[in-house]
Length: 315
Ligand SMILES: NC(=O)c1ccc[n+]([C@@H]2O[C@H](COP(=O)([O-])OP(=O)(O)OC[C@H]3O[C@@H](n4cnc5c(N)ncnc54)[C@H](O)[C@@H]3O)[C@@H](O)[C@H]2O)c1
Image (cartoon, rainbow, N blue to C red; front, side, top):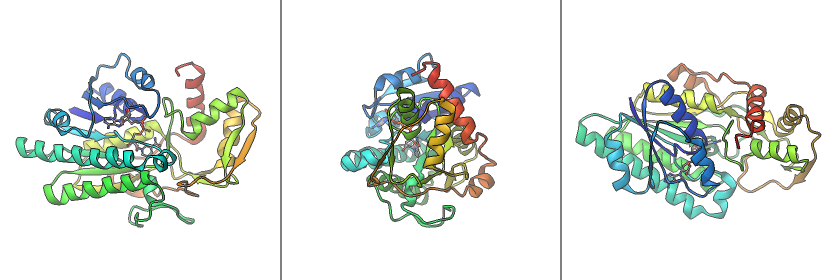
């Protein structure tokens, strides 16, 4: 299978590229190596990879269309990620995440028209679309129309554009709502990467609020296996939660990081940040049924793998 991966140089994308190549797929990466974090890390992510790498912007239809025409499927991961950063630059998020997704979907529509067969799309959505919720698991049908950050709003817009592409032009799209993905190569600003780094340096770990916030974490290989299953079994338009269904309190996460890193931790309590939500908890029954998918890596195991990777000096 020939697969186009937008954002394939990034954290999740580079793991996906490795997995696709390992099973014998032909992979083209479209990535602009943006400066959201050090682009050299993205170059390192793909170092020695057999994927074809095209440096281009997803907002450029002329660049995306020929790549789409050569593909049997596309995984659309390219985006500006990060909730807090989106509050500082909502227009950039709107441009890359909304316009960029519209261009990818339009390229899929035009390719299907030219070739007479659909190009299945897998779109990286986010648990942030659920906004601030009370207790209980988040189900895909429970509404997602009260985002609390520009990032979340752009991901919801992407889902709506995807629905329109399916309804109006029969572009099959699976929207995967990823719940905080972590693992080796993760974006340096993400909590687990930062916490391990600060712990190693003996610096205080920032805890926003009282530490009772709850997060459902997904190890990157579990996110990748969900993408592969979605690509292999397209089925019209669908939205699927991808998480662990085993959420943890922030303070328990920090304690586990202290234990694994073997460092005594200092905590710095700070006010809750705008855009943060108090809890996330994935109901993953729909993904289990639709894809035959299930998460395999516990948080303890995932944190151990992350720590081993960071100790090996890979970053
Ligand atoms: N990591 C998570 O916890 C998480 C959770 C939910 C959803 N997601 C989504 O998954 C996707 C991948 O996230 P990630 O954590 O790997 O982020 P990442 O920043 O590591 O990867 C994104 C990639 O997209 C590229 N990119 C950005 N703008 C581009 C543009 N205009 N044209 C071409 N390429 C562009 C970047 O250079 C980067 O390589 C994103 O869509 C993100 O919103 C991630």
